[in-house]
Image (cartoon, rainbow, N blue to C red; front, side, top):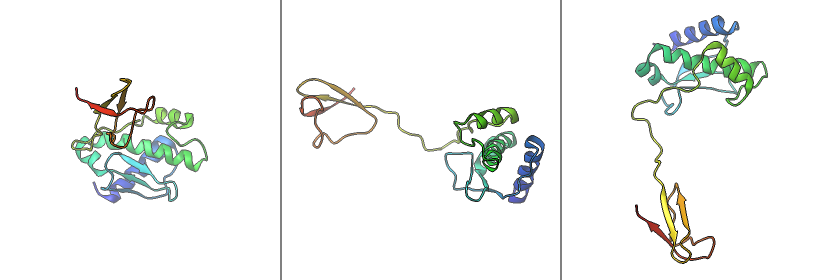
Length: 151
């Protein structure tokens, strides 16, 4: 699918599901990594991740377009266009858009490891998502030396 076909598809979905015209630009953006698409507030344009279409197909692309069009139409109408707004949630449900896009293979994943530290004096345990410099930081209760606990 090329840019012109994407533009036509977005315009068609906008008219058939929302009853309103999409008069701005829709384009593929291959720099998008962690999202299926995005709505640009200043220009009112919509950018779509082409890998979502290549890997997950046409139905996933339509769901992403509906999601971004919800942002677009609600923002134009000066209603709640953010993910947490009730207007957005109800409109997304009405048109059948996808709330989340599918995960792409080889996408960067956040490490879920937990680092455990223990105070040498009072034995207080600290769980941290990030490693800390035990030479720089001390226990918050007794100012004792912190030790990395291996599990």
